[in-house]
Image (cartoon, rainbow, N blue to C red):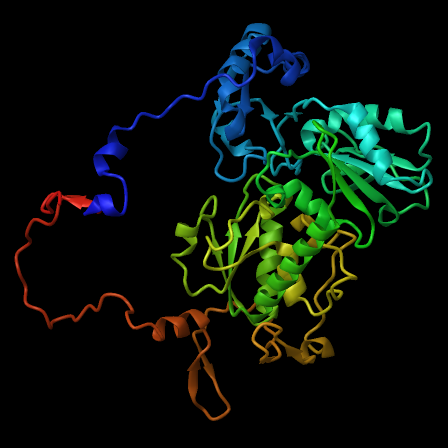
Length: 489
């Protein structure tokens, strides 16, 4: 019977885990992984134990890279092959558990500041770029030499941006080159004047200029990619870039370009739909999607106060990487909010796999804060730190007596009129399950309790004293897919 729905249990128990082979030829390891620069970083710090963090797609090179670094530095290397959350974040907790004195992060990175001080070096990779083809593609999409354009790229192509700009500057007068915004080393001071930092990149704007004035030319992606919408780095750029400004992407291998305006419109429409779902929600699940990024505790407290002010009930869930099976255990939750790094919050989510939508913190802010600017005027912020006090994008909640809380609001999904939220002060514990009505009646105020009462099965009933006492007997043995007392047919 089990073979009709899944593989036999014996096949899963006897399967051998395959070891990924070497992905990069040995002569190219030093160039691809910048081992000379990494070895110098380790020697300068005098580290004896170093953690190496690889994403899943680069684990095949991990052993060779670790052996080469141990040979050149004499330090002990530890490979962090699994992370509790996204591989783009620095696994500072895993490095500390290994007793490492420094961390080397390989592959794409969100470049979020760590929650704990630890020396970190980033190796984004050096993907080959056909500069001549990219120059022709840029000239075809930007015929006006005076138009302001920013050069962007995926992390592995960032090394080629200056070379591309050198080939373009003789003709184009207003060209801006972005660079990765690496977190500052421990104990160092930020440069003055500090360039504009957005989307994990630095933009050296001239005085009086704004990023919203520029179009974008993004170098990255691949023609073999089945769905370009699944690239979280490109998605955050499209969501946050100024609407109406041109945005083109270019494949670094072939020079083929694509206008990303239509895709940006689809992404914004999807995010506006999620904001409406959050406004209709009564129960919000706050998913802790990171423990190693700075200010995650403050952001979690901010989101809890936000949902409480909007009259919604929130639950904090620490489940590691969210999967449909994990979130299906909480059917009373209307929407989930993933508190993660900018790339983790926009990670690929297969349509239809999750039974409830997963939002970014910015979308919950737009749904619950009546002082938030309307769509088209508010920026789409991909990092939760931009929502906190001290950020130039922070919008405080209006006071309880403000008329903004009483503004009529109609759901664009159900067409129903949303009632104004009841203000609750931040020191209210929210643990009271009963609320008195003016008619001296009592009613449940917990949406989770209402959901439980509407279910046909509400759990096991104790029935104390109503069942006879019997001796304990042996239960069923085996695993759920094939108990011993079940036949093989």
